Image 1: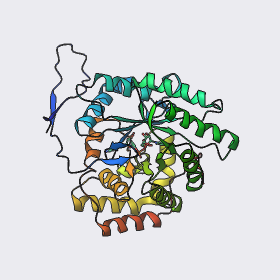
Image 2 (image 1 turned 60 degrees about the horizontal axis):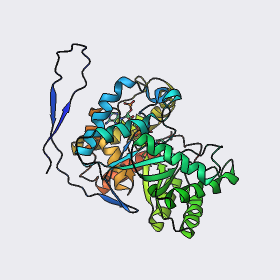
Image 3 (image 1 turned 30 degrees about the vertical axis):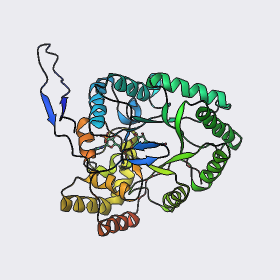
Image 4 (image 1 turned 135 degrees about the horizontal axis):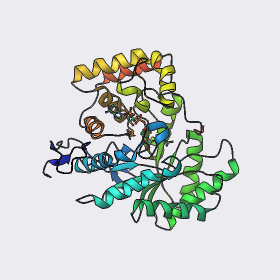
Length: 357
Ligand SMILES: NC(=O)c1ccc[n+]([C@@H]2O[C@H](COP(=O)([O-])OP(=O)(O)OC[C@H]3O[C@@H](n4cnc5c(N)ncnc54)[C@H](OP(=O)(O)O)[C@@H]3O)[C@@H](O)[C@H]2O)c1
């Protein structure tokens, strides 16, 4: 077993002689197994990094980088090896920042990073219409990430809804990256069951296994589409990665109509939270009974449904708390209570505009 992780708190003092106190984090005994995802072995929960570089929605500032590095180190020290990112993450001049930060953190990690799995997503920009353009995009991500191979190369979204002729180019792009050995596995994101079957068969004919499918999946996003998607993926041996498992933060229980986050999230939460009160009450009740926290219960629900959740994390405190979603399981009655409350809610999470059938 590794020794306890020693983390340094983020200091806000400018005093040069100040030595930040060291927090000794107890190393969590690992009562969980890694799971297979195509040819890869990954932790049953990964961390999402959309916020790492996103000022508009997530209030990112470069002053957060020291703590984000601590989050990364904490994850690795606790055997979390899956990190989700995208080549489009990072707003404005910070485009690519999430991949760049991951690259820096991997590079500077004091220990073994061999089993780190970076799942990045390639945007279906309208100008990406040839396999070579995807290969070049992949090489640019590899540069930012400072690694030799991408773990999972995912198509960020399908163009089937608005530019069906481009869709084939995306698929050929994945094939080209895989054939050139730039990526270990390929996946999709925001594909519905019908489109997923099509790409699965197309890739299969070219000898490329489809390993994962990422969808919005949480107690706020558990409609028929998500469940159909899950069963299609199960029948094909494709892993479902659950994005926004905390409903962008609404399922942490920390936001109320009187306490909303700044920016666009606040506008969205104002419309949804009043309609999901009974779900939030059920989450809190179960959390109290089980001696867990609300985010831990919400993430654990995704694991119990057979998905790999990738909660977004912005601080060491959040990362530490979310690690506590592993190593235990909600009971059948608790799952039923949560799902009943979720179905009974008058408000639902809005779906990604790029999600296909
Ligand atoms: N494929 C796609 O199109 C797509 C779309 C969306 C997301 N994703 C991926 O999925 C990942 C996760 O989704 P998400 O970031 O949208 O939303 P999420 O995981 O549902 O929510 C994450 C946010 O909740 C808050 N939070 C997390 N843990 C917490 C805790 N223990 N206590 C209190 N607050 C906590 C943080 O924000 P605050 O502290 O600001 O509240 C955090 O950024 C993303 O980072 C990204 O990698 C993919």
